[in-house]
Amino acid sequence: MTSHSPAFDPDAAIASAHQDRPPRRLTVAAGQLGPISASESREAVVTRLIRMLEQAHCAGAELIAFPELALTTFFPRWYVEGEPELDLDSFYETQMPGPATQPLFDRAAELGIGFALGYAELTPDGHRYNTQILVERDGSIVGRYHKVHLPGHREHEPWREFQHLERRYFEKGDAFHTWNSFGGVVGLATCNDRRWPETYRVLALQGAELILIGYNTPKHYAPDPSQNPLQGFHNRLVMQAGAYQNGCYVIGVAKGGREEGVDSLAESCIIAPSGTILADCRTEADEVIVAEIDLAETSKYKETLFDFERYRRPEVYGPITEQTGAIPPED
Ligand code: CDT
Image 1 (cartoon, protein in one colour):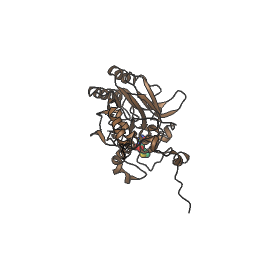
Image 2: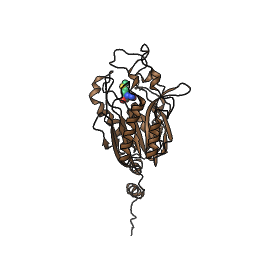
Image 3: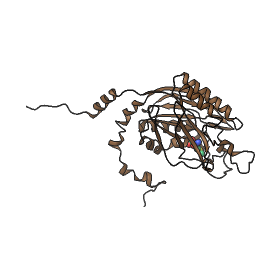
Image 4: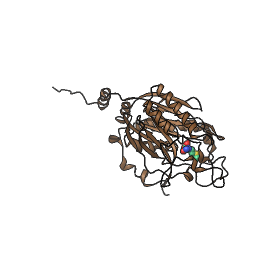
């Protein structure tokens, strides 16, 4: 007589393990900015940020993500040499918090809401970065990130309608980071980083469950304007894929609208690890969106299809870190 013991079903085991996992709920927000003019003061911008912080808090949020370079106009659109009326240094922060930003930190700590904020940083030893910080609910800075992928160009290119001189005005960051915060593992990335799959994967390999991405994306792409009508599609395509393929929540938050004559994409959104959109902005102005997420839900993807430990094949991925450009086969 044969006895049949029930076959081990790994998917059922994983599903039941998920059911036992306690939820780690967090209400998060994106604080999208409309345009900031070149003449707008830091104080005026900080007032706008505080208003959104308060709205997010009223909606129950404990964390709000603000955009890239959220304290000033997007100044890399100007070539400054030969334009002495533009005082470039005035666009950088030498202190964080500084006199103009301290009220944002104070109000956030008072309300018990954390935030991510992008700004141009000039360090005491003279380095310039496109920086993003993560601030906990008590007002302490838990992480600082320097943008890794700097798009655009270094020299004046007068054939363009406007410049994109991030490669002139910033140095490249040299690492992605995550931090234990907000009851989970949070990572930061900035604008152009979101187009590169390596960004999400390197963050997810450091355990990222929630990735906050601020952006300034002009709708006009001078090197290939055929991409212009696809800007919104590409924005979602990359962030939804990044979320799904790494079992992470992603918040993408824009500074959108027409700023100093340049139209920028808005379309901020909050994305689940399934890749679906939980909330999205409908305007190109200051706008807050909110979603309740459960960080424990990330395990549904991280422990099944994208169980890195079980399925990744790093021994086959050598070219990812060994080369930058493509090397096609020789004839
Ligand atoms: N800020 C930023 O990184 N913007 C880029 C546009 C680059 S076009 C020269 C982006 O990827 O959205």
